[in-house]
Length: 180
Ligand SMILES: CC(C)(COP(=O)(O)OP(=O)(O)OC[C@H]1O[C@@H](n2cnc3c(N)ncnc32)[C@H](O)[C@@H]1OP(=O)(O)O)[C@@H](O)C(=O)NCCC(=O)NCCS
Image: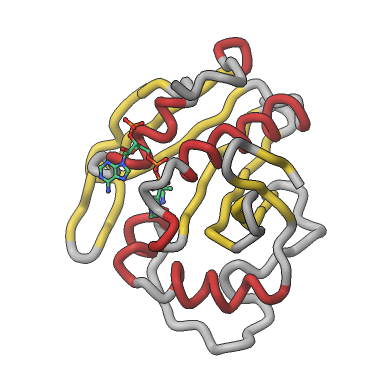
C-alpha cells in the first residue's frame, strides 16, 4: 500500500466494487461531472462493469483509497493513459460522499504524484476537471499542479456543455511536501 498523511492507496478488493458502484457510479450527477462518458445502469455483479480491474492493462493503474486510521474504504483513484514514451499520465479520483471535504482528496493527489514520479519515473502528470469543481482544482493546486488552459465547452454534463480546466505538473517542479 502507498501511504499519504491520511489515506492509503491499495489494490482493489472484490468487496470494494459494490460499494464504489453504489456510491459513485450510482450517483448519476457525480458520474456525469467526473467521468466524461454517458451514464448507464450496471447489472449487479457484472464482471466487467465500473471499478472492475483488469490486471493485464498496462496503461491504467486503479487503486482503492482507504483511511489509514481503520482501513475503511473511502474512494477510488487512478493513474490512467500511462504513456511510457512521453512518460506522462493522467490522474483521477472520486471519494465517497461521506469522505469529501476532509483533506483526503488533496492527500490522494499527493500519493498519485509519488506513484507517478517516484515509482513509475514519469515526467508529467495531468488532470482535467470541470471549471466549477473547486475542490478538485484546489486539491491539484495544493500539490503544485498549474492551470495550463481552459477547454471551452468540452464536457457534456446533464444537458449542457461546460468548460474544463487542464492542469499539469512536471516532475522537476514537484516537491513531495507541496501540500500547504
Ligand atoms: C473532488 C474531490 C476528489 C476533492 O477531494 P476532497 O477530499 O473533497 O477535497 P479536500 O478536502 O482535499 O479539499 C481540497 C480543497 O477544496 C476545498 N473544498 C473542499 N470541498 C469543497 C467544496 N464542496 N466547495 C468548495 N471548496 C471545497 C477545501 O477547502 C480545500 O481547499 P484549501 O486547499 O484551500 O483548504 C472530492 O470532493 C470528490 O470525490 N468529488 C466528487 C468526484 C469528483 O469531482 N472527482 C474529480 C473529477 S475530475
